[in-house]
Length: 203
Image (tube, rainbow, N blue to C red; front, side):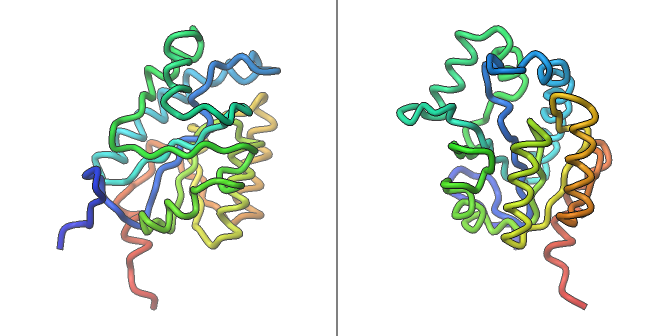
């Protein structure tokens, strides 16, 4: 049987790609430190997203609302494209497609006070591939909450950035050793293998 599709034509399935906090104007405190790494990370995430879409894996943008409770994701994208030179360069690389999903979050974790868990249940996702910024804050908090909810966590180290290389490495090691996450470079990530691992019958 072909994979079940949602109303937008993308597939439901056991794996989902999360792109965390990449849609931004990058005008916050210490943004200069983080932005040193963002363009390269954005290029890698864009390539990974293209492979995910080809494999029928749903893509979810999980993004800060920056305390603007009257805003929405489309307005955030428009703001970055029109009013932020830094943001425009990144959003143009990672422009959401019509069938992609989005979740706005008020705090560090993608799960805290959001619809993410409900959406993942709808998509039947059990493995989450986390990408974006910052590795030692929003990626790590989201990974921790995913682990507490029995999701399997995969993080491509080359698709995550923090203010420093050292902070990023510490966060990645926390994901691996504390949260039982897999660290798989984006060029080695096999979407079909991840899907099959989740659907294989228990031995």
